[in-house]
Image (cartoon, helix red, strand yellow):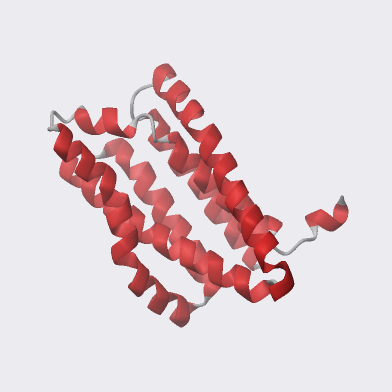
Length: 185
């Protein structure tokens, strides 16, 4: 059991990855309803939902440049921090345009987070272990994504439609702080 805890991937990559996948899943059931609450068309709701993916797409090349300049570990911290801040800021977004911009910037942060994690995993695993490591990485993501929507729906029902965004920010901040702590090792 202790050997599992000493694995160089568990705490610096898998734990924050699970937390962020959970956060992302948490807003799945409420984001379309939240966007629609701004009295916009369903077409624009779709555009707002697509903003994260667009931000990831637009952020890929700059993320690679940033990653090479500041290093993998620091890029992971910046990436997860951007995602957490943008997720939490949705709580106070005054307009749908701000929601769109936050989702776009959060997507770019997610791109930096993703690229830096894969680069880090490639650096610290041997070629013979790489497939297993990345496979577990995918499983961790699916587990977080599976539990997130249920929790997000419950939080929204108990609080407000924006409640899950605050939890997103808090859990995302924990992931960022955890990643910072792992950098010190």
